Image (cartoon, rainbow, N blue to C red):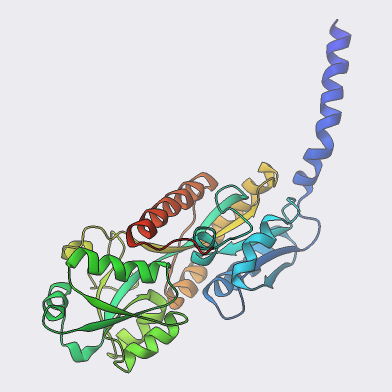
Length: 316
């Protein structure tokens, strides 16, 4: 009987060995990070992470740029061996809610770590001569204001809708292709307010071309010292940030996910990485895979609730 048990254990080890070996040896060839088109926020993030990740893994890490809306599906269908990863943000998170995406952010990936976060910031044209949210609300009750947004259904648009719902004032939305053109319109006073990404707004705020009234996060942002939260100014619903993250295909071996997480946590704590991200308008952070999974789930539920509240439905 004892001999039988020994043989059975050896057989189980032999069966498990092929599955364990790739994870133990990983990586033995270059690793690919899929992300959005060159010049975008996720591409910026990927090109900060990739060199340090390559050094830590002892292999080249290649940034593979694709159209933003294609990254999720392509990464989800990639071989789950740790050699294809994806760095994404809001588009990858919310595209399945708004459109007929070929992936599910919550079920088709193995979360590795959050990489960065950034609140949105409410910026207005200086000609309004307001310095607080309450002064903006009072002004909006006396004249018609316009706010610029990117595409319908993203956090920048939803933040503007939340403002009108929370304050009861009518502010007309002017849609643009993205936040960049909306900020250009704000600088020329074509619109009077925008909920902007922090990185997009900071240079204009520092040079006095725009006035920052508040950030959408629950806590003040170190990226905009002295700018209060919207919640502290009476808009209690605001606890919104944008995040960047790194994922692997769903069936990637847990040993590989754990190793990647350990490396990423160290990378995001590097002072030079923090400095580069701060210069781009975001804060370097990291998380456990479980924390990222919970964050993605909570963000998904919040966005579905908000889209339902404002009457935006998935494209058919």
